[in-house]
Amino acid sequence: MFQHFFGFVYLSAVSQLVSLRGAQAECPVQLSQQRVVVRYNGSVAVNCSTSVSHKGMGWEASEGAVPKTSNSLITWRVSHLTEWEIQPFCYINYERPCQVELPVIIYKTPDSVSISIVKRTGPMIAGRQYQLQCDVHDVAPVQYLTVKWYKGQTLLDQITFTEDSKTPVNVNPTLLIRPDRDDDGAQYWCEAELDLGAEGPQYPPKETSDPLNITVYYKPKHLNSTETIIQKDVVTLNCTVKANPAPVYIWYSDHLKEEINSSVLQSSTLSPGNYTCNATNSLGSDSKVFIFESTGPGYYVCIATNS
Image (cartoon, rainbow, N blue to C red; front, top):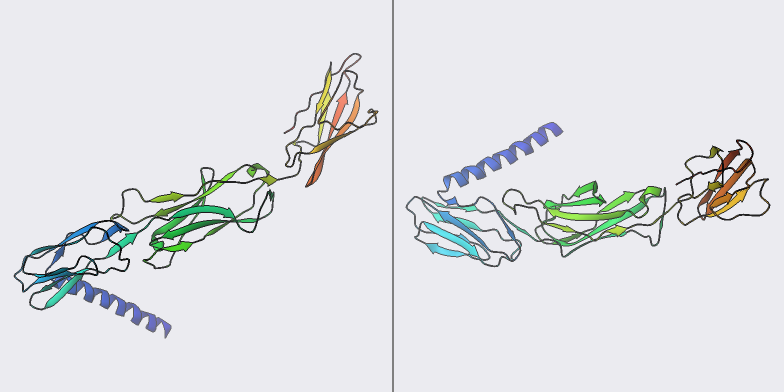
């Protein structure tokens, strides 16, 4: 039953479309443009002509109407088009009155485009999910709008809209992100683009938000948990590790006589053995063990660099 119903609806729609095209084909007027795309408050001019004898023709429109005339070429012209719902049509009195409509798309670029973090202030935490929002104000028509999301120069996502609206609207699409430690300092931004087809501007109008610079907090994490050093001369153990907020360091070893809080341990008389460095911030800690082995009497050197 549903198949028959939808089949009937489909055939009815096709029949109406064929009837409309047939009616326009029987109406002996030609438009210089089959579709008009014009910026809000911009100018427009479209000719309507006929090659047959008639009893009068004209343009009907809420702006720029042309009274019935005996001429065979008439122009619908508006210097500042501001009527969003305008539906102009050219009519002619021939064997019978008929008319041909001119589809008009009036577009308006957004007043502003901005990006923000939803319900969040301050730094983000690595591994947690956050929602970004792109606020696009007063844009039309929204069904031709695409909002694109970027991180740096990388396109992350793009969103289109199904609403059928001729007048300006506000849209606020969102994007979910889960930043990691490498995203600290990254820039996110969004772009609103109107793709108006072949009749529109050669380059689709675009408006871009200012970049959103994010700060990501993440705990210390060494590249390796242990490292063996066999070296001579001055010994330098470098425990520096990336973390945000910056970590504090504590060294542990049976060979140390006092607590050392620097990220670097250096000595010309460091004894062979194990030296553990613990880096800690508000999100956690991570340790690394330096295994220093002697190559013989004299001075020893140990260099370990972590990032």
